Image: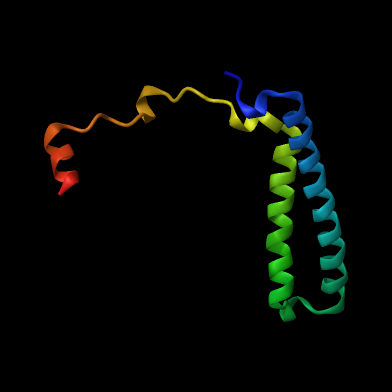
Length: 97
């Protein structure tokens, strides 16, 4: 059975979503730039900090979707060193209490 992200429509949709997030980030960056030039560095408002956080999230998610696309959902093999150890009988019984 094919997974939802393996199709061409999903690939294009994810990458288009990434472009949309990058465009939104560009608009936020322009707005933040105009706000920053109107105030001094010590007078940063909560709106400027909120816009900065949203800008960072839009840039991060947008670039991940644009450049990686459906590869974000690929399964990867974890080294044995980082796998969880099976619970012993005593630990498993204690977890139910």
